[in-house]
Length: 125
Image (cartoon, rainbow, N blue to C red):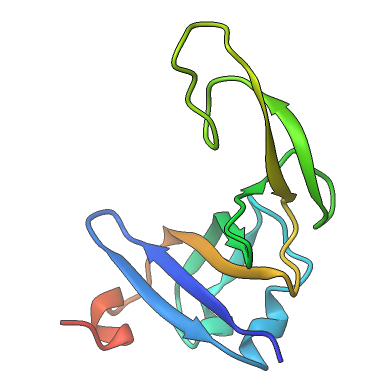
């Protein structure tokens, strides 16, 4: 059984939501940058874009790593490593940009809004 924690970011506020099977099965195999329909999350009219996530060990998903494997890559300044000195690079562990059973958290951003506000549909105050 696959369970994901979704962090849905609207312009002003973020909302957290946990999804289990069968909703979580719709995310398997998707990559960072792909769009997901709101019907998958029972949010009609909304469209979301996958912007990132983390795996069960806490390593970030990186879009340029193929598949869902865990690997160490050489990175400069950017997400996952912020160089204290100019030009400094380090080898860091990341997971591939595809969503798999190893993924725990998925970050989503709203691309298209529906007729009702997101906070009302998710039951947040």
